[in-house]
Image 1 (cartoon, rainbow, N blue to C red):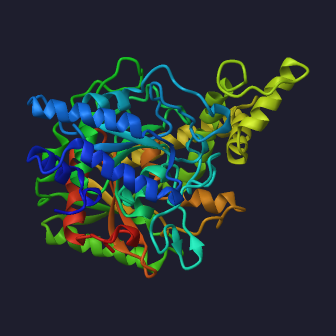
Image 2 (cartoon, one colour):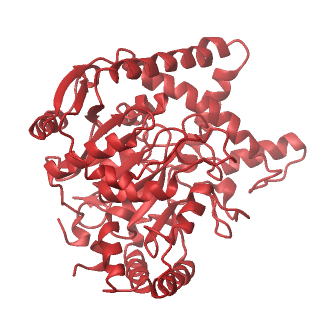
Image 3 (cartoon, rainbow, N blue to C red):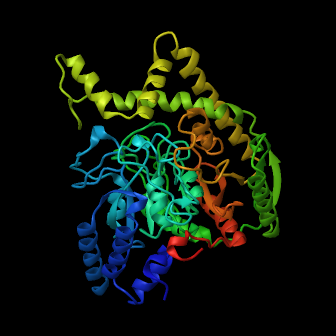
Length: 496
């Protein structure tokens, strides 16, 4: 039997069912791995007592023949953007340091009901604003690829963002899976950087209740795992209609895990011509073309499609998202939540609190958002961006009249060095160039590791599907997984 931290969710479930090990032993193995890998800074809060108690309850249920479901007894990590009852939730910000929610987010509550064991809260970019996990008030999480942990040569690597802590934890074997949130690529890009699977479901598939808001019309929770099958198993537990979230979709949730095993023969796969950017690294373009051949070999028809408004997606996103962020973060004023820094007047208290509580990137986006929503500029920027967003969604609808899924790279590069691009926010924002369009259109998309770069770092490919057609996205993702046979792991877990 492999080391317990080498298992995927499906393998761990089989081992628990055959009583090869207990849920407590599984939790202890992952807690020990977490203790050894603290240099990654993947967790803001570790919850070993909670995990062992939940694992013990799981073992009792299994012995009594009352296992709760597909995740019973499995150690998972929760992004520190989900409110968890009785466990500190910070959104990686000083302004919420020490905040202990009195309630549970719907997604984490759903996972609890499925029997999951929570090992801790993972690091992220502050309020999920970033593509590298370097804006966390608790220090950056590090990518476990390269010897020693988080380094190639003398350079430490970013795990991507904002769900970088979740990606690093799963890649390093500290949890069997983790929750992430994706606003413009925050699940898919770190999944690509860390060599794991990341699935952004359709907007509305998973409840946003209890998730600290960044951009309300874009935020969506999703699973981060080592295999496509595991992503399907986690999504089944996370998804579902929630009357407490007005944007939660009241649509049936199919058995996503069954979809993974269906063949893709007969699918039409689209290649968006506008995604072939000038200056795209040759190794990423080559991997993308190789994937076209993988789909043809499995009986798919690969055709070119056009998404003509793609070029406007990134600027549109960086108007819509900061605008919504500036509105959502107005609630952190020192009166109702978290940090309060006194001042001589009420206005002084507001300014002192927000200046001390928010980091530079969050302040930048609040200023951008306030500007584009201000009188005289609302029509010129925010309203125009929403109109362009409609055109981007229309492009996808037209493309999906001809194809079943769209294939593209996940990110324009492998993981980069910690500190790189820090002085150039525009270069940092370009990390999301392939992921933002699907977010603006609210479509499901998955990143699957498919190869290694010339310097031995993972590269992901992305499949985008129709709204609420996660089944096809998972089928196509599994096809990439089969064809690529990607089994590389960070050297620290001994499987590179």
